[in-house]
Length: 297
Image (cartoon, rainbow, N blue to C red; front, side, top):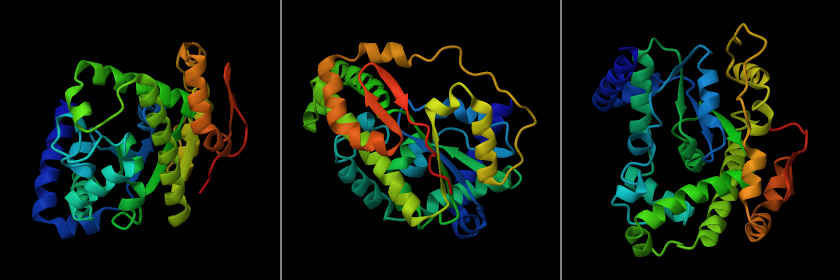
């Protein structure tokens, strides 16, 4: 019943935001956006952040709030290839669709925040990292928690998932001249990972203090410190526990063994500079994470 009520509130927020856009756009206070490339462990972490005094917006809102007319791409009428093929072109098309303003999204989130008692509002949308610098004018008071995972694994897993969609329904991909062979998809996905990191770095430069980076490899085994760090970043009281159970098994080593030598070479060629910048040391047989401070606001 609680789940249904949350989605009922989304319906009311949609209507209130449209009718009273100016009011609810102004009323939204300090929204929190949790973003990150696919398969970066973000969604699992958001479940832990639910222990904080936050109001979590149901669903990611990609098709309605952020990428209207473009998400999901495979069933959309977007006039551009998918974001992983041509991210800059995709984002330009999204902004054209919105008239380069995201006031409607801000008003809807503001109305939802009002309906949930004014708590800090959290929107979990990994894909929003691609748009983060573009929404900064509309959301100057926003804070972003950016989850990062080693780009080799994030790119490889996402490429495998996307390639499975391509071989099941290739027509639209062929129409938009998308890569079809897996290694070409993998290269494009790795480039998209680098582009996403650059987008979030740009946001951190233009909105100092608004971005907290958390790494999958840090919180996987020891999630409690990461939750406390997120609470401190958001100005909230941390949960009253010292230990959180971690996942039963990390499949990192198993996944690395699935990547062929040629695929490792592709990933190394595309990712190495950015991996090193983010504190990773790329080696073909293991994940090495340099214990260096990640970005703090």
